[in-house]
Image (cartoon, rainbow over all chains, first blue to last red; front, top):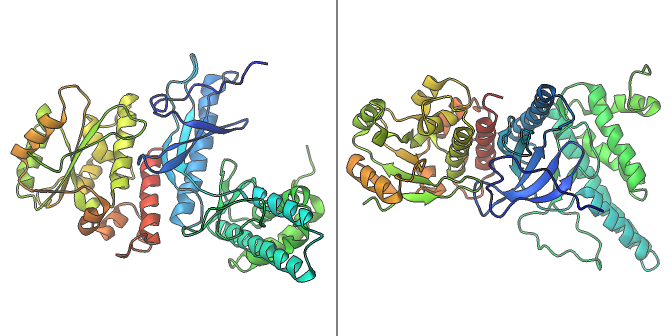
Length: 274
Length: 191
């Protein structure tokens, strides 16, 4: 099998030493780790490579729209004080890259330390399973209370996002991170249940949009609810805790939650046509 | 020689950048006049340092300008005027010079010179500035800038008056939030 070669980096990152390291490649974008404009501070670099199979004019227009929409959402949320990675630099035109291509657009963001919530919950569920026999009732309750606290923080973070007038569009436990507090000791091993201390940070606004509609907010919550249900069965019964964290976070929350009940009955898509 | 001239190699960019911050500048009017004559040895980014919040704020503008310069899409005359323009959140070039550029009353001055040609070296820039600027070089760092920057004027220029103002303490959240808001405004200009 031929080894996968990511597309050539757009300028100026073809100059960067050491070169950015590829972390994740999705269908639309590649995520790299590199340094910010301060060499001692890391940054995340999201590149939307040009797609050679698309008509070049259409390709540029779509890519530009998507990268600037993501950047505008991040900028707005930073101004509003929501926990998201800061936007550090942006180029929606792109230069260099593959021969015949135009390199693609890119966006540089603040690097967020810490695990994604998916990993925290997976580790917790594995740990609980492993230690099921040796935990007494009060220890189990204590563990569940910690997860409830985390879910409550997640709900509050999403509420703050919605309050700022942005819906995420793709809320999963992989798009929520747990950034440890600055003074936390960074020990992670399998012998203890994972830490749930820290700030919940929302990431990946590639599908986000600006909206204040209950419908869009409810769909955000519904998508997360389904994601938790399918990937973290043991945490699912505590989803209600997330709803409670959300309910208390802003004035419009109860009405969005009311709409969530409708969305649960019919699914994410509103129109049954097409 | 100006002891505080600093050469910065910004990550990702191939061109070194020379920077010096002056306080108590005595000859701002004449510096501005010589800048406007357009002589190439007076091609500098002369920035009113009261409009600069932090080192990251200034380097974001430099990065934007040099990246646009490397890709042939400058909106102003040269990469140095483009640095001043890049500080502005909107596309109005005249307004950007009025807000962020040197004025007759400028007392604290940030000078930036990009090594766009091999003749522009640390020595040549240091010698030229030393003989041209009447002011006291000070370290170009966040501590010094915090004594110089006019936060209310900066917030007004970026239409961020609603944001909380930074306090004097270290690791201040309000300052981080304001700085991040400035960086995103610089990145998004013209989008």
